[in-house]
Structures are given as structure tokens and as C-alpha cells.
Image (cartoon, one colour):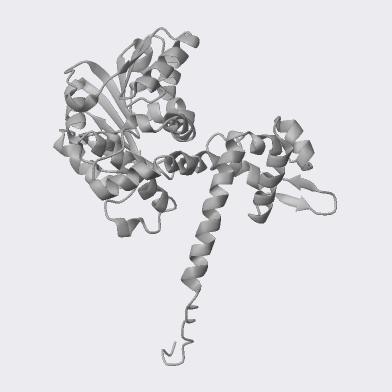
Length: 359
């Protein structure tokens, strides 16, 4: 093609960036409403595809009609919910329900919308850290473990038995025979509980910095009648338990640690000969420019600054942040003594990479 005859690219509108910012603001506000729709169960009620008035929806969800009506207005203008002005009926299209309701075990994006209001609670404290340094402590986040439990419930929990365990040849058979398993940074322990229920001859331990999360996990395990599992509140910074475990997992937890380098080295020491290590962590690049096209790039850095990085810094830690990247992660794993590293990715999980190691 003749370059001189080629049609020049359109000149960007001088207001294009302002338009983009307005769109961003609207999307942010909509995200807050999506979180409310998830937490109140409104999306779950509407997932049946039935058209309802605001009164009908409020009754079905057991909520106040005036608040439901206003929420519906926001969902209509965001083109998430359809409204017939003649009848006042509202409907959530099936393709929207697939992304916004609990009927989808791995694709409910409303779960992630909860991060925005959860993190906004510590905005003042984070701003103070911008001015003076330091960090916001773990206990300043009242709902974070609850949100993270739902997050992991869509990423690794649905596939832990059928798809994750088989990634390690022979692990299923070893678990059936009985081995010692540790989840480092277990949170509310849902993944560990599923494993404990599936493999009653194995012994499972969960460590987490949060006393609240550990106590909650222990209570739930007791309610489920799991006697082969224990949850212990523990700061892993200077933890040392050499040769104690056959399989260790760290599920979206290493980058939050005060000293990830020390924790990874301790995990390597804690593994017995033939031991296995699974690290699930954020699938980002260590170079920010490389993350521009990532579908969750902006979310990674926001959650990192508002939680992951600042929690680490509050403990006097390295403050790696969520987007430390697979390059730095692999480098630190090698420094910790892991020289055989495989990286696996699941189609349903664009958020995480799965680092598989054996010793």
C-alpha cells in the first residue's frame, strides 16, 4: 500500500481523556452497587430470569423496597438490569446473571466488586502512610478474610481435588495413604478443609497471622466434624519447623508476608525429602508496563497498595505488593532453594499463576 495515500489515523478528541475519566467514575460507583447486589443476594434472586417490580424483588429478597428501587435505578443506567418503563418490571438477562450471581462457581465477578468498599474503609490510614510511611495493620480490615474466602472459592477451591492435586504425580495416592500437609497463610481454611474431608488419613495444619481467621477456621472445621485438621495463629516471619511436612501450600499468601524471602526459605526447610510445594500467587509481570493489557492490572495495584503492600510494611516488612510479578517470584523461589519450578495456569483463573515444586 502506498504510504502517502494511506488514510491518516483519526486525531484523538481533546476531550477523550476527560470522557474516559467520567466513564471510570461511573464504573467505580457501579462497582459499589454490584457489591451491594452481591452481599444482599439481589443478583441471586434475579438469576432466575423472572421479571419483577421493585416491590416484587424486595419481597423475594427480604429487603426494603425503597432501597431496592434506587439500586435498580443504578443497575438500569449501568445497562446491567433491563427495565420496561410501561410495566415497571425489571429483569437480569441470563448472560449477566452468569457473571453476577452465585449460580456461577468460578465466574461471579460480583465477588471482586467487594474489594472496593472493603479497601475504602482504610483510605484515611493509607493516605497517612503516603505522608509518613509505615503501613496499615492486618487487623484494620474487618471483612478482608471473608472476601478472600469468596475469592479463593472461585479460583482454587472448585478445582483443588480434580485438577490441582493431579498436577503433582502420585500426590493423590500419598494423600490417601496419609501424609502431613501445611497451608501457610490459610485464611479461613476452606481449601484445607476440602482436602481434609477428601483425605481422612492425612493430617492437615493451617497457619495464619490473623487470630480471628484461625479461630473462625477452627470453629468451622469442628462444625464439619473434621478431626484430622488444626488451625493455629502464627507469624511466619521467623517460623522454623524443619522436616515436618510432605506437602505445603501457600495460596495467594506469600506476597502479603513481611519477609517473603524468609518464609519461602522456611517452607523449603520444612519439607521432607520428596516433599512438594504449591504456591498460588498473582499472575502479573514484575514490570508495570507489561501489565497494561492485563484484564485485572489496575485491580492488582489498587488492592496491593490498599492491603497487600501496606500490611507487609506495617510489620516492618519488604512490602512486595500483589504485583511483585512471576519474574521476581521465580527468582525468590530459587534463592530459597527451589531449583525445579513449573508454572501452571488454569483457563478459569486469569488472576493467578500456580508454581509447582518438588524437593
